[in-house]
Amino acid sequence: MEKIKVGMLGIGNIGKGTYQALAMNQKKIADTTGLDIEIVKILNRHPERDRGIDIPKEKYTADIDDILNDPEISIVVELIGGIEPATTFMARALENGKSVVTANKAAIAANGRMLAQLAQEHHVLLRFEAAVAGGIPILTSLTTALLSNEFRSVHGILNGTTNYILTQMEENGKDYADILKDAQAKGFAEADPTADVEGIDAANKLSILISLVFGLGVGPDQIPTQGITHVGADDIAFAKDSGYKIKLLASAREENGEVCASVEPTLVPVSHPLANVRNEFNAVFITGNAVDNLMFYGRGAGPLPTGSAVMGDVIGVARKWEKDSAYDIVPQLRYDADLKFIGEGSNKYYVRMTAEDIPGVMGKITTILGAHGISIETALQRPGKNFGDAPSSAAPIVPLIFIFANVEKTIVSDALDDLLANHCVKSIETVMRVEE
Image (cartoon, rainbow, N blue to C red; front, top):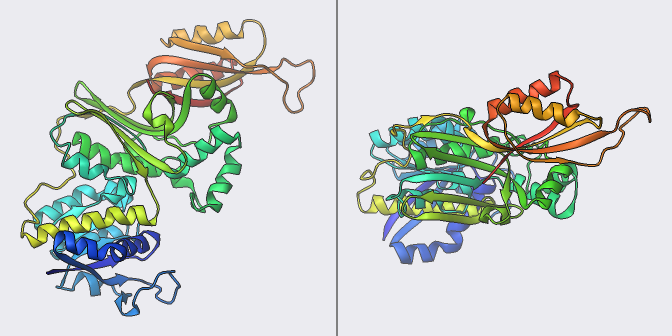
């Protein structure tokens, strides 16, 4: 039986899940593949810490060179996270003739082109299934079974933290801040949740998907991104009353040689499969010209689901090593398409604002919107009330809700600035895309 030795960088939650996924299924893997895969060395800067898992201490090393320079290790699994030093470690491994498997979406989104080039130059493989949707095998599916398709669009709920918060806001009527504390207590949110709630995590993942689906290099910093911190109870109520659910949606579509993409809170019709993805679960909905619509659904995070995806990549690489064909396929990442990235493109938009409840205010608002070429599909006024220390004689402040027909986001922004400048409205509370 062929022996495949693996070096692993990091023994955090995903590292533990990867080690456990191999340990609990090692016999089944060997019986199925004929390969004896073993994690022989683990980079652990703090071996004295209790990791909550039984690993022989002799497998630990604090020296990265013990793994990168070991000629018997053919696969390096990078699970330390972040862009650096992870990128440098992966690059060195590839240059040393070792294939690399990673769950690091930030490093792949930032440096995937360079790492893929190194893998090709040195006849080894770079694999990152676990970087986008945890245990959901979306990347492998896109680059194997679905390779015969030209893809039209990809929409994803790619962050479990935000999906949990939005689900709880809808189903239990709690405020964002209270649910965030609950999510942190349950381990669904980090102590610093910024990357999740501001959409940064999802933008990294969408950047990778755009490369695979459209063959276009779009960095996460190029993708228009908005988080969920401004989604309020009024937005949730309107969505529910109008047949929508609010999801942090990572979306990209191609039309006539142009690709548009964004990560932002989106009103999704309840009839759409993505609307029913609840709590910490993830899903990816794709449309191809041959396969039509497909949705992949499952746990997008967690030690064991993500560890399962990591080990799937390790097994795939090991099989190619055993057959001496590790360099006979093109790297998964692509940047060769003759397409143009145009940002967010044209969409329907939901806008919630406040204004004084006085005669003529709605007319002024619609006149300014019309001057910017914005067509209104829905206009709704909520009951008004006085706020704070406002005198009783002051006009009540009313929430106004609009849905605009397809229009570019820049035009929406200019129109809203104009409304504020002309004192037609008091505040712009929320702007969200509407999925058709």
